[in-house]
Amino acid sequence: MSVRLLCILHRSPPMHGAAQVGDFIASSEKLKSNFDCKFITIKSSNTIADIGKINIKKFYYIIELYFKVFIALLTFRPDKIYFTASVRGIAFYRDLLLSSLWKCYQLIKSVDVYYHYHTKGVNQFVSASNKNLKLTNFFIKGVNLILLSPLLRADFKKITTVNNIFYLPNGVENNFSEKEFNIFINKKYKNNKIMNILYLSNMIKSKGYFNVLELASKTKKKSIHYHFAGSWQNNNDERQFFEYIKDKGLEDIVTFHGFVSGSEKRILYQNASFLLFPTRYESFGLVVIESLSYGVPVISTNEGSIPYILDEKSGVVINDVDKLLAALEQSEQNLLNKETAMYCRQRYLELFSLEKFEVNLVEVLK
Image (cartoon, rainbow, N blue to C red; front, side, top):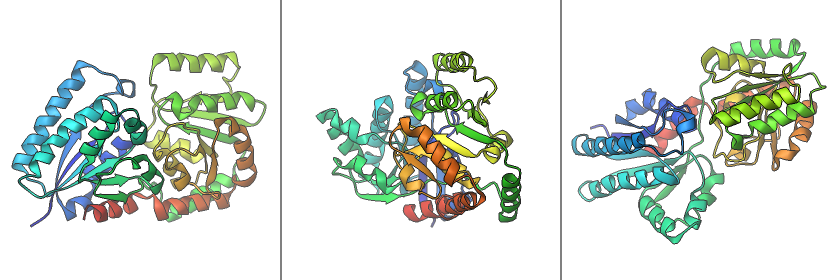
């Protein structure tokens, strides 16, 4: 008989890292060929702006999710449970409530439980109070943790109740055959005339988009064009962004593309010289490996797993966003070439492709 796997996970919308991974897991044929799968979507926010806010609809989603999981445990009777866990706030208490269901279920049937963490902040949360530490230890008691890289292990240094810890780097889609990429990259560096800087992520200040905009002001006399793409978290940030562009006279060198996907995203990556992602809060950063898949080197910060993803041949990792200009100058001198692009692409294929992620996920769950 096939092992029954219940997956409770985030899916888009809204589009963020955990949702992107959840979308892929739910469509994974390799997972479905190894397990008898049932998927339940964690609904919480409809837009990026809704994340972190409390409203009546979210309480309805919690009740709905609770009963879906309850019914699945009764009727599907899983042998394994995969769950996308949250760190803090109302989402943590929602997850704590849900965990009571499979903790009771474990009293009548043996089941392996896996919590997949797509974010960091556990240590900060449990350090805030003894209550948070006790509740988190109870929540994690006897389960297996799936972390994005060994660099995130320290986030759980105060947790003593975990069963096993597995490391599973994320993966992203491969948009080229080997032949297509070689043709593309030869053409790109043959016709390379202007430097295109890309920021592609949700337009949240902690992810560093405004630092990139300030860099545009510092380099306005150079032949550099800055491209921004993503969804806004709030109207104030959006207004401030465009006011800064007007005040500094950056209209000719800054383009805002809004939320992009499909061919629009592909064109931005293909034209990019560098991805700039000076985030101050990140556990992994799918855009970093997405950029590598297009052969685009990355300038980013030493947040979360980013130093695990990048090495000195594929990008520059800084410990202070004030060093962004120096990092760009260093990258322009050392990394703006075809050889670096080929190396970035190969690093992606070996470590961060969807195929690699899929195989590793099945191995973890087995």
